[in-house]
Length: 101
Image (tube, rainbow, N blue to C red):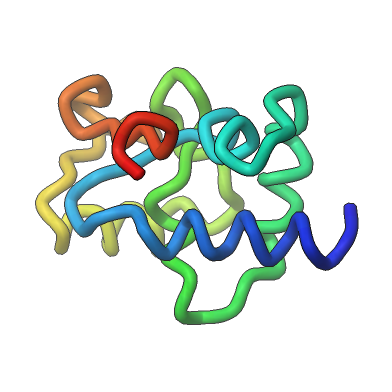
C-alpha cells in the first residue's frame, strides 16, 4: 500500500457525513481499487485523529475494528444504533461514495 492510496482512503472517509456509515469495499471502489477492501482496513488502522474511522465497517454492517467499544460509543453519539458489533438499519444509514460524491 502506498502513501497516495492511504491518503485517498482518508480523504474519502473524511467526507462520510455524521450519522452515516460506509464499508471498506465502497471506499476501495471509490479510490479505484474495488478488490482492495483489506488494504482500506489497513489504512484505517493508522489514520490520523481527524479521520472518522468509526464510520467504516465491513460490507454486512459489522464493526470489525479492534476498538469496538470506542467506535460504538462514537456512532451512538451520532445517532447510529449498534447492537453487539452490528450497525442496525445498515442499509438506511449506508453512504455510498460512488453515488453521493
